[in-house]
Amino acid sequence: MSRPRILLGDDHTLVLDGFRKLLEDRCEIVGAAEDGRTLLRMAQELEPDIVTLDISMPQLNGVDAARKLKKILPRTHLIFVTMHDDPAYVNEAFKAGASGYLLKRSAGSELRQAIQSVMDGQCYVTPLVAKGLVQSVISRGRPPVLQDKSLTARQREVLQL
Image (tube, rainbow, N blue to C red; front, top):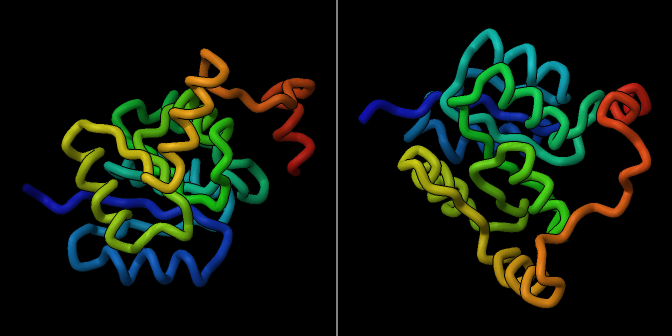
């Protein structure tokens, strides 16, 4: 099997450098972007197999970027790597088209495992949030959602700019 082509997205250079070092022996790193707008542009140009992204990114947050990415590149797998462990964020990420969700405090080997899982057609959720996600679904009877629905996606985009 060929090495997956990966576009990295995060607003922290140190994180991007760490991901690159962690993955370069098993994946082809096609690029890195530090904001949501650049990530969209690069993804369109490079057509990667996988895009990693963070929820909190400048110019266009990761969830909104994911929605746009899935429209223009429906076959590209999206893996969120973020600090947000609230089940509502996990739910929003998957509703936006995510195939994987990890925390930045996850083990490095977990990112490689998530990449392998999504390339095999499966989803991946870090065990660090899986238990809380399941418990919130059981206790509420439905997936958690973010409460702030007062702004449209376009309004959030303008606000971020």
